[in-house]
Image (cartoon, rainbow, N blue to C red; front, side):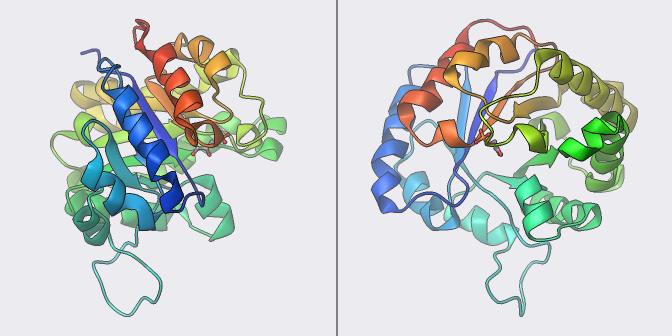
Length: 257
Ligand code: 13P
């Protein structure tokens, strides 16, 4: 099955209500690119207002807690973000792993909680510059992804619909220079093989694998032409409708992944 390209904006810690007009513009433009699935993950505070107005785009969260509720000051559960209108959550982003010390085991627990709350999950993986320089990028990403993914028994049945993997090498995030298409091709094929090994021939081939790290309108087409790239997880360039939809436009050209 060939799935629609999936273009997801991760707004990170950017955005007050002043950004609602930008979200509206993205939503309007997405209605002209129906061949592409467009989504944004704003800060928690904007999930509900964007969801309330959105007609086309999906709205998601950038994280959630692994427990359903309790004495966790400042945290937000999967059920809460779903209640606010999120249909998906980004988990295991490198900025959470490094900035908040999130381990693979914690990311796995969060993914289990998110699936249980009915959310879709975008599970992030990616190596640091030091790991790549030491020649261990492939081994690192395989280990990280395997340890961050819930056990098969805890995964939902319609997995290819509910799970997306995002490969985001840390050294390409926010630098303006994405990974080379050769590096992306190598890692995405490794991830695809791992997904087939872990999830089976039925589901493994259909789970979309996004690339993230300095995706811009002018480099998106080349990245989308790489085998096994099913879309992009976009940071900086998702903050304006113009640049974000420039990437969606590149994805609306036929690409066979
Ligand atoms: P940039 O697109 O700003 O490099 O960020 C990528 C990212 O971290 C998306 O999650």
